[in-house]
Length: 150
Length: 150
DNA sequence: CTTGACCTTAGACCAACATCCAAGGTTTAT
DNA sequence: ATAAACCTTGGATGTTGGTCTAAGGTCAAG
Ligand SMILES: [Zn+2]
Ligand SMILES: [Zn+2]
Ligand SMILES: [Zn+2]
Ligand SMILES: [Zn+2]
Image 1 (tube, chains in turn blue, purple, yellow, brown):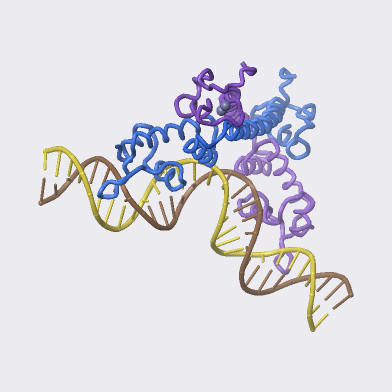
Image 2: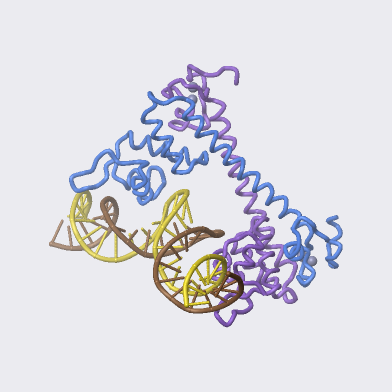
């Protein structure tokens, strides 16, 4: 049995994080000491390990809650139940990736259109693009343009 | 001059959003009517357009605040000032993309290792991986494995 | 002159994930 | 016996970008 500080240190998280997980139904210590201290068992330790590993894969605490409730009732759950959660998260991740790809493309276009020098920003292509149309850059108007880039 | 509801409708945002932008120093209507209504000018409209366009590129409201303060003082700012903001955001976006790529890889590995069928989750490779090591999947232990996938 | 659409304000609430604080009790070592 | 290190609780705080509500004032139409 571990006290909160011991378990927290072993996994390099804060004591508060374990209390937070408890409050949100992810990890309840299996007992309390006479004085009310949280006492974590080996199984609790395994659950914490599960939680932290699931986080590294991108699951939210809500997802993990769902996965854990399947885990505790493995026998009455199906592979399909588990896979649905994984595939939903995968779809979510891919949606975010698409958004970030769009950001990246736009930002690169903006960056490439600007000389980045000490010249006045009055003619800055980036500001012009943001003021009118990000996808329609007119670098020829940027009269101190670094032409090497084009 | 536009009242808040007119401007909001024109850009398909909520009135509250405009008030929120004002509270955070992004867009202050250039005047108020006698009765205290916010009155937005054409220039205010241009600024809102700038804000919303910058959002589509991935800038946070804090970034936009910075870009706007450069914009209003274009003459005394340099291209470098603008480009720094863009390049910082680009780096931030690419960091997030790397994280998402990692999530995607792990999730795909998990998904591919699971049959997704109605069999008991007691042998589910996903749960096993999360309980022990996400990066070291042992699908041969998943005895109702869909072998077509391998 | 009243109805309905519009506007004002301050402040509460939401997701997501913690982190920190205050005020006090417990345990361990010296 | 007392200090250091640990634990308890509830609640506040922070981030990001809004959304919503309550209680009330304004404006145009019928
Ligand atoms: Zn330039
Ligand atoms: Zn420039
Ligand atoms: Zn299976
Ligand atoms: Zn499975």
